[in-house]
Amino acid sequence: MRIGKYVIEFQNKPSVAEWSAVAGKKEGEGPLGKLFDMVIEDATDGKDTWEQAESEFQKTSIGVLLDKAGIKDTDVDVVYAGDLLNQCSGTGFGLRGYEIPFSGVYGACSTSVLAMINAAIGVDSGIFRKAISSTSSHFCSAEKQFRQPLEYGGQRSPTAQWTVTGAASALISGEKLQNRPVIEKAIIGRIVDKGVTDSANMGAAMAPVDVKIEP
Image (tube, rainbow, N blue to C red; front, side, top):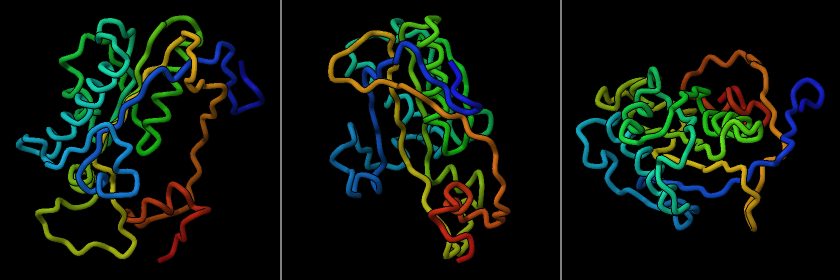
């Protein structure tokens, strides 16, 4: 049901039954490093391109999720997933080996939550029993996509930030589970243009209250 204009309240409170997070080397060296299910030291993950590596990260994340949940891909009704690449190609190639109906989602850095909201809506309505939300990004493929390829050797701006190299997935279930979080409400926001023109300063565009727009 809707509460006001923006808030969705889920009647059946879908459970976040299981989750997984696969991270790159830089993320593994940070304060959350020990909390990831897997840290992949090789940024290419044994592949020939950054884009192929990103696909492999997402494929691995969903594989870890299924293993942790003790289920097969055929037990899942749908996966909502996306990435930062054109036409969600990282996700498409990453998930093609799974027997799960796929719905692509693109919301830039909100993709993980947007995918989870879509999964929760499907499960709460009773259309799906189990749904996966998943997303991936890769620092090198994101730089190539939105700014300049790293091979170009351009100087990084003082406002430049780092896109995560990694992937995360969650299993959203209609079952009532012990000791698992539930999704009670969600908000799908509207677009607010703060006039940020610095393509390197992602923080100012996404969290203008917390980040100075001017360097």
